[in-house]
Amino acid sequence: MSIEDDTFHLLANPFHTKKRKNLYIQPTLDDEILLLIQKKFPNLKILEKDYNNFIVKIENILIDIIIENHIESLINEQLLPSIYKESSQG
Image (cartoon, rainbow, N blue to C red):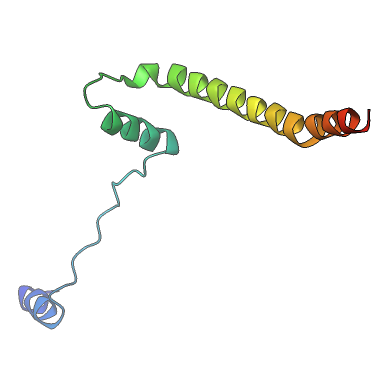
């Protein structure tokens, strides 16, 4: 290809350029969560190395809350109605 051919090609298709390799690396879910935590608490210095400790603690808190809610639901839906039935019959 001569210089004239290149010029003609650019005139004919000015938006065409050589494709570059996509260097964008998609962040992982953990990266996004860390970024959100850092945005939520801008006054705290949250380090990436502490992230796993945070996630484990958050998971444990969530498990405790789910268990507590499940137990409360069982008590309210099954245990309390049976106690009220017994006391009203007795």
